[in-house]
Image (cartoon, rainbow, N blue to C red; front, side, top):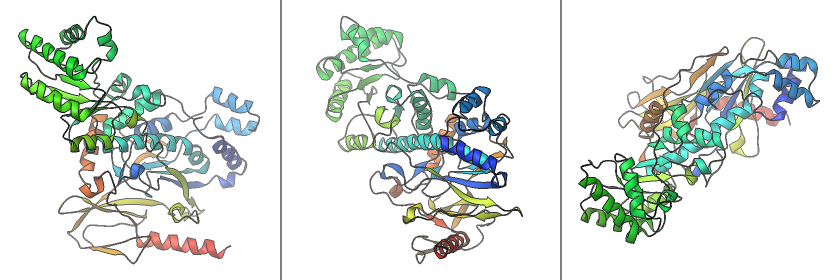
Length: 485
């Protein structure tokens, strides 16, 4: 997984189109493709970019092995001269992306590919596969961590994930978005993130009684003793035996730290409140109460409202599978084609559904912050050649309802250009940040959201506006398309 040739991780029609461009070499012009999404998942107010590291590694390994070419030959649909060409295939273009861990919003380019169309076309499927999945899990994890209100959230969904890659890269995405660690040891090794865990019910069931199981575990792991208390009866057996175990450790002179109980079934609000009283009365007020059992952001928020005495959360299935919204919906669309003079001719996809009408041309994104609060005011998509500076007044307008305008004076706002280069002329220029540094970045990014945009239900919308020049280009192309019918 750390070094893998995924060149054939593509849909067949990407390769058949490649052969078409190869046969008609005049059609293999430099083009610009944008990967973007149309709506935030989970009914949320934002999304989180994730998957850039694997995307870069994919492109660096992009080549057709002799085995790949022989397999394609066996399909009987590719000509020998095209297959010979694939033997020397390498990526030679440019790629830009929103940095990993960064907030992003609908309709703005997540990834921008500038390359000969054969190369750009081949990469469509893999780019979407990688970015869609990891951004989905990161966004879900951010929502869960927000609902936890600062409590630690641990990802442990590997056994329920849709395969090893989804479980491992999904765990990485969850940590970037805010989880304190993962149970996935391979993820820990590959990406240097904290791995955490306790024990299963089988540990307790394998001993003659629960207390012996607890004491044995405590002897093994005195500095990380979290005891699972619901194997037999949480309040009559589990918690009392946990208290006896903690007293046993204290009597041995063990300094109690990182210790407590885990609840994995039953009414978590009721059980946690009862357990808290029992632990406090026994002299263990700093014992942690953690919980698991099909948690998600909505259940955690509900338990918080109910006053549950839980301050550590283990979240598995609903996080790693994004169970209530299992796909991200990113798409990859042609935005421009290079002309003989080197300039790019903007292209637009027209649809009866306004959400599916694309933004044409070579574009970049500015993020606009309110200077006083540091919160996001809006994002502005503009053409590549446009330059905006903070010392000029700025007028924003809603591209769907352009009569709605917001005017910002110099000194009221700050600007940040979002996209960064990953490849230039086929050479990687991206430096891989550490995963935990990306986590810090992502947490800081989330602090730039207004609370109204972070709420789980009916969040306030962050607007993504178009520059006047891009908007006029889009309207012109729409009118030209209509006139040609």
